[in-house]
Length: 463
Image: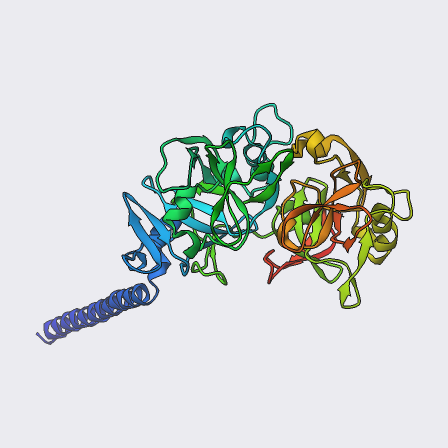
């Protein structure tokens, strides 16, 4: 009998132990489960953007939509930024962009914040599809040096979709567009989109001159001038005027956002790339070289062209030099030519172990060449140091300097960017500031930095 009692007591104790263990495990499970839910919903409440990854979703959050004042407005089945004080900055391909619209299909149209170059529209045409601008922006089958801008973007095939460009020819700028094309990857801002955004009182008025996509009924082309209004003085007799180019692109709406909040100080970032060597970079990024800030203009497999984000100084003031006393051609042999100075006197101040020879295009840009930027590539010299030529990126980052491009050979003039930001022909004997460009070895290591103006890439030795 006693033995049976001990067995029964032992069984009961085991059952109690099992219940205790079960209760402890169950309590731990409950604590873990509800603790996780508490943390999850707290994080969701206090970090609502954590689950949002694509640009369209971020832009069109309910709290971002407005019906008065500046901001993102419903526009049919899409949305449009209107006004001046709007958070629509995007950083892509080393350049700052502004969001124009979120389109009906979910794609997003952007325009560069600044002019990326200046060009004459074209001779004997006022249509976008026949212009030098279109050729410079978009690749054309069988056309050498077409698609310059497209080819200098970072991974355009991964980001860009067909862009809608307005082709209306107008007697005066107006809202609305009747004739459009989607044949191009890159276009220009229409007068309609400029007006719909608020015109002179919008973020699109940057105080500069830039082309629109619309021709005028008198055979000329509409552009925005520095006060924010429209004009169509694209040519006068044999004179053709060069205005700024602000490309418009359209990207996938589901493009991932890597960071940023849409402000100028912290724009939405579409790329998060770690650059290892200089030849893995792309145009638009900033680098430090010779304790100065430079900007990448062109990248190839073995060399990279960079341009100084300033002019050469003599103490605290600009060093001024004439292009040449007797020619408007870039000459490496004549001691009194800017080409000789850059590749001898200036060259001696640089870290020459990092420099390599590159091709500098010296063709003319004038009436006899039809102001065709592609003619600039008809002549060249080889050297490590040169200048920017017409049709290159970032001409307007600095003002008051001479380019590499000759203009009128009879008057011996050279294309310059004057203090007002205009493309202007200046006599070769006029003393101007110098904005040098150099070719660096592509195998130089990148030791730190992300390539922005405030956090440029820092270069090290060869790989």
